[in-house]
Length: 276
Ligand code: A2P
Image 1 (cartoon, rainbow, N blue to C red):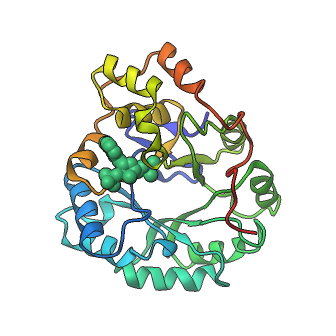
Image 2: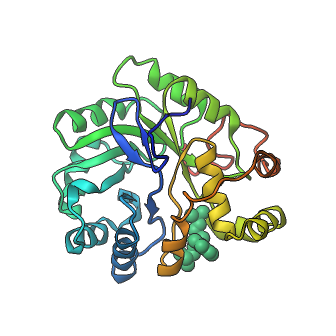
């Protein structure tokens, strides 16, 4: 099992018992300011209850502002931010994030990438959780080998591994290892940052289903058992991208999408690493 499904596939249960909404709005590359505030506000209006930001995105203030201005109560929203791992102290950096976000805690705090190795930051992540500033803790961009080094520490296990994941980057080796270790895989760039939307197989399946290519790609992630965070700053797209719980891709369609994989079923989180 990738993670326990709830009765309703709109949420999944993490290994630490916390519930995470299956679809979140990703705000990577959305500048701090009105564009980000609007995107988050529209997402909340459209029923999203999960927002995914990061210290490196520079837009935590806008995410916080949208949350405050929304009629949706804070406790109904699952909020993620990520530790910028070129900095030394995860617990101290989360305190700064909380001030920027204007919240008392985040629901999930993850190491953004395994800079300088996969283990050194983990005690600081656990400290952030001990202080009550993060309900759950996890990682991002960790390969199987890096995940297993972290698990070997014997501390709190990471609840999630957020990685680039789509039919074209179907990291089956990594997905299977996450499932074995009860780590929920979160799919970022599920639309290939837009590049996968025009691909012929995706387009044909979408046309047959009477859906958009984006809905097909998000739905594929859900049926592969992941959490998924499509990004958009357009209201109609934000609204449409979450309308994926009223149809199912057939086994034939899933197999056709699986075959688009260019990762070779890899255990790696990235083909090109931007860190050392
Ligand atoms: P925009 O933000 O202008 O709407 P990913 O989630 O893989 O990172 O992909 C995000 C990219 O896909 C963004 O460039 C976004 O553009 C675009 N996008 C998101 N949803 C849709 C959609 N429903 N239709 C077309 N493009 C979309």
